[in-house]
Image (cartoon, rainbow, N blue to C red; front, side, top):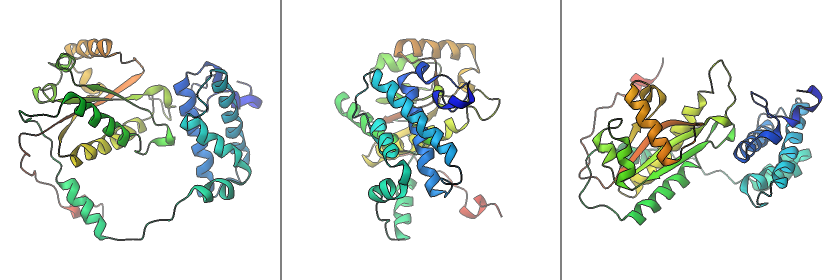
Length: 295
């Protein structure tokens, strides 16, 4: 890589040429670089590290050119947002942050208890009611859950989530012998995977462990959305450690991916089971707040 033309490459290993990246990779890289530029204002380091952020701006311009050559819709949200940051680059605070910011809410501690009361009602549901919403209603709920998931925070604003919605029993049956009956019998399943291509490794690992944090944040938004409608949920582990623990698991997962058209660059994390509960299980014990605080 020519040091004088680093902006022609991705900013994370393995430093691919921008022209060799997929559309998904380009948009994620654009979000990541634009996010870093914007964040530099909040951290008050834009001026002191101007050369770094100017390089990122040049990289975004190259991505814009590449996406335009590929005829990407000019109204694509990431493209619109990144161009706003580029236009305001020389005075981000006055031309971008101040015009698009909102006044903060006033502090109200009582609101915290309202939210805690809501999350205390969540249970891991494993017994489903005989009467369930229609397929159309379940698919509409899945879309709402995914909408909530995309508003979760993600490291570097990568937005790497990928979901597969399962409502047909024949599709859910593909998970038999790798997941328990309460999962395969749930009216609605949502597979949660993460696009490994959008992460650059910070260590000798294949990808950053932030991947799992980003997944968890999105999943909890989905759980809360489903809960708000009166539906029950169960967050089921579906990571590589579980999949690779048995040869039969590996075979089942590969078959599942083949039938569900899940690419091999998608890192499996979880399966969220959703449905009308037969009942809400008893409240489990929780450790005291004080015992969770490191003193």
